[in-house]
Image (cartoon, one colour):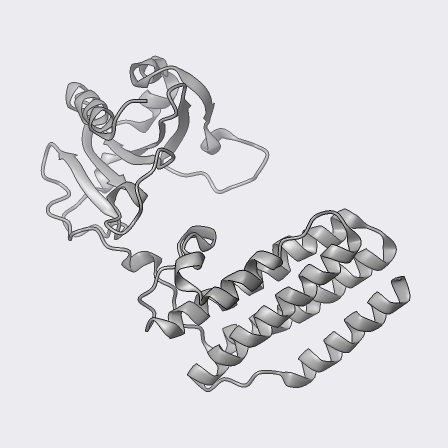
Length: 284
């Protein structure tokens, strides 16, 4: 596997050779001073170029970066509809395990007062259009404090969709139940856990993408509960996971509510729990 020094040398060296590439910026975990280094970290690179379409029409340049294991070009995909953008991205995983997420963006958007992601490092700036950026920080990725409305909506969504899981389990619709457990209900739990970590750290702690640092930031007992929220395809296990998820949500929601002076809807909690237990009893 090529080293970071080799990869950065390749990325910058190629850009230096190409007149149409005017600047190079690296984002993401590779420039995060707090991120642990490992072999799976991507190289999140932006090439600012004179003509984006030049790099879309002729793709022979890809071979310069290595042998492709698999590649994706999300900006020309049709499976997920999205707004057209001026940039174009190549997500490239190479045979040696390195991955580059390389985006071509128009150089004419660059200016000294342009706002960049807080995790940005200038690797090349041929015309000094970018200027000097602040040292990379996680400021753009810190959890934001919730409003009372956000908190209430999160709680309501958690309890509302919990009833879908009960319905799916009663009907024997495994995918329906698992989908709602692992998507909307877990999403609300993640919001609450992130807010809880924020409250405990004055919103300086960074939970990371998809709870990457939960094990380090949550108290051991809460981390242990979080692990128990993951279930297999057994109906009884899914019920257990749901109720553990509820315990964890309720505990952290109370703490967040107390921290901000928000109202926690105890009646909603009580009524939905009673409903869930009644459905569980009638399905056994």
